[in-house]
Image (tube, rainbow, N blue to C red; front, top):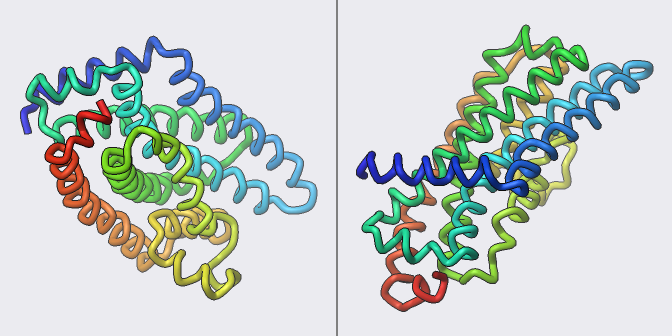
Length: 260
């Protein structure tokens, strides 16, 4: 991959993010209000269950982080399609992986900035002390989340390229299903048997399980961390050849032109 191509695409996307009011609202307004809503709930819940409020707040922070880390990549691609600039970008000689990697990089930068803001708000406004005492564990869960979200964003990109622009809704809706099957608020043992099997291969199951463990016990299980990283990396390894194959097929059968 050519770094100067990726750099120019990143610069272009960052400019779009700064100037777009819609992107600003999606990237900052919703995550910040999420922290405020569930942070206030955590204050209220202290009267009957301190852990419940902190658990809900922690899970929602990671949920918002996962959503941004995945959706920004796919929405940036769709904005190229909607603005009819997708064809122009591809015609500049950018390869499919340079194009994808630039969007992933912008998504990671954007989501990390928002995560820092959300964690700062949770710590300073709502006394979420585990952020200070368990910072290494939280960063570990954040790393798993980014890797899993990147893999998911590549899969969704491939699906949109293969199926067409009318499937753009997958950019922001697919994450909801993956989070649901990752069981954000209940342990695997408490889930119906069918859901347990699905949850074991979801990219965020280990993340939410780890968040619950930090809140309740103050520590992470090494086994769950290794499993979380293994599943997240597996999504990357599976998604990249799928993306390449579908992109090449779309180029040959004309779907890429129709998408543009």
